[in-house]
Length: 98
Image 1: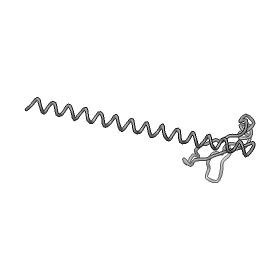
Image 2: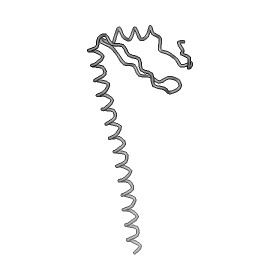
Image 3: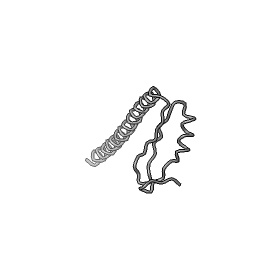
Image 4: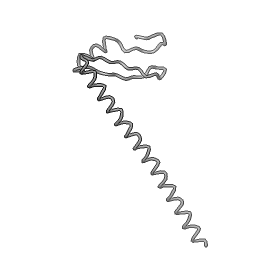
């Protein structure tokens, strides 16, 4: 098993070369080390391929950020609606008592 000085697993160079053969222009592979640190591996056939992959990665990153934001916003909105519903229920109980 390939390891570095931090005792982290290192993806074998042979595997990365094989991945490059099938990547049709290049690749970026993102992983985490055993310590939880992000690790990026990349290979490009040309500068044009590098720019295309980087542009796609930037666009994809923005997309998942928007989706996460919308998801968080929906969760917050749902919580607020639940709280309003509970508050409405409390008001009607008070009106019944009065």
